[in-house]
Length: 347
Image 1 (spheres, rainbow, N blue to C red):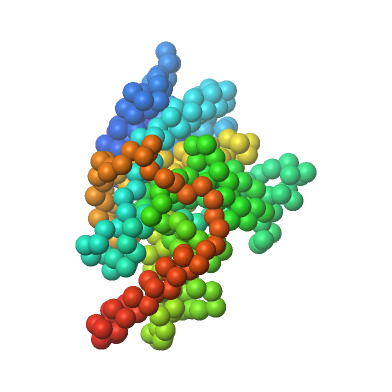
Image 2 (cartoon, rainbow, N blue to C red):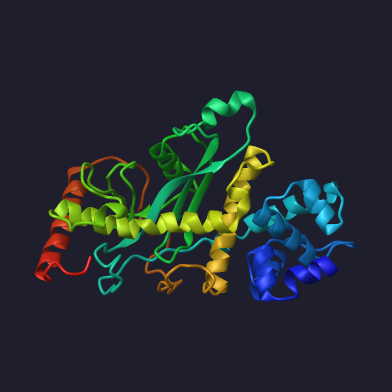
């Protein structure tokens, strides 16, 4: 009881240090896992202890034996309750994954106002894993590490919209995206909307990529201004698409279990990645972000939709087209003309 009191009852500072959430958010997690996930305490363990043990494992990436010693529980109890809590948390995906809204014509955010009808950005990231020796070639990335390729899609407010973990590190990002679109309950992009992607993806309907062969990365824009419509478009694209990089950075910075190879099987590790993303959204929604070095964004969340999912048409495949290329060219030229009309001030 002294350990638990120090974790989530003593102060918000101690709670955030050990469990990565404040006391109010911790209680919200417990309530959601109980009411929606169906998780409950046992005769010898309270619901709060189970959740605290789960969050502590994610936050500090401790072995089963170390967690058992810290909480004065057997290794079997720690393992069993961890997996029960993990399954309960995954049941919250429909509640916690963000429902995106497109960028409107009256948007005033300098990073996003040019990308009308955009829903957010997507990219892949590597999560280091432990796999059997015979599986290592499949999970070896181009940098030589053994990792899982995770597709992440986020909105401008830094909340995840869709996450697909589990792919081998050797898989190309485009292959992972095609798989996500082809799944029965997978990633869905309404026609007329799109996401920002990097040059590793195809520029096609629903996915707006930068121009290749032009300056793109943010560090390349510190010494001189863009000189063409393509360069100005790439600069604006990079600044808006950077939201997914920030999202991954916050995710890995908060949960230590994502920064080093896990002791769990690869399938369980994929579920842990999804659980961390769901917790990330919950924290962004319920916990003040004053302690995170991020600019506050407009996080208006309108749950109402003009059309139901059954009436909307979604993109189910990716292929280049002249129409989408022309759309990008026109967008780039309009952005560049607007910038020149304003006297080439403000990037």
